[in-house]
Amino acid sequence: QKEVEQDPGPLSVPEGAIVSLNCTYSNSAFQYFMWYRQYSRKGPELLMYTYSSGNKEDGRFTAQVDKSSKYISLFIRDSQPSDSATYLCATILISNFGNEKLTFGTGTRLTIIP
Amino acid sequence: DVKVTQSSRYLVKRTGEKVFLECVQDMDHENMFWYRQDPGLGLRLIYFSYDVKMKEKGDIPEGYSVSREKKERFSLILESASTNQTSMYLCASSYRGQGGEQYFGPGTRLTVT
Image (cartoon, rainbow over all chains, first blue to last red; front, top):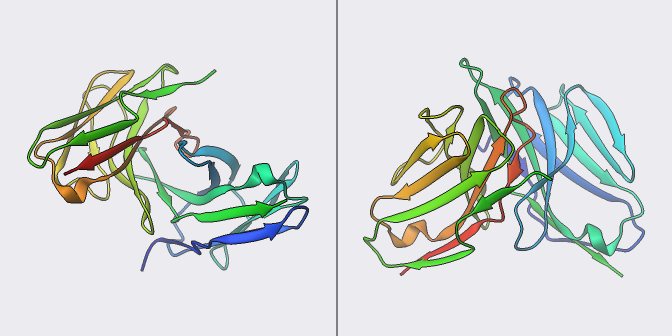
């Protein structure tokens, strides 16, 4: 079983729709949760970063974490064609030496249709 | 503006060749990482370094080695390239204590024939 599971899609939605992207994780020791966005032929860039259970909002984006069910979500409101990208969820485990190692989901490829 | 650069965008090598991938960051980050990205498998950590001359194995270190002689530079070495090492290679860096906030380079698409 992978430590972080993510539906690879692809997912296509019309412009203006609400998008829901989801991941589950297996290790309850994971402490922080991130969403990265990766445009075609580019490296990933950090989109959202959260620690506690609950919601964190940034403009049209909302990250949600439910630690009891080990479930993380990203919601995109009023989706735009510029949101078309691959979205990767990630979690972090701080090792005994304080070294930080991210574990990524496989990514969901999202296309917003104008 | 933060910047992570990688030495090549595209690279074609032959089986058995020694391959060097270079990564440079200008943010004075302590942590540096090498990943490979493959369809259906996502990003997988090969090696990371949390300080000069320090390195730790990631999830898939076999067939790779790394070198970090200066804080800003982290090199990935394929000692004897094989076709199953054809992939997209991504370098990233972060401040110590902020490992979740990694800055990525544009990637190197390596093809081994």
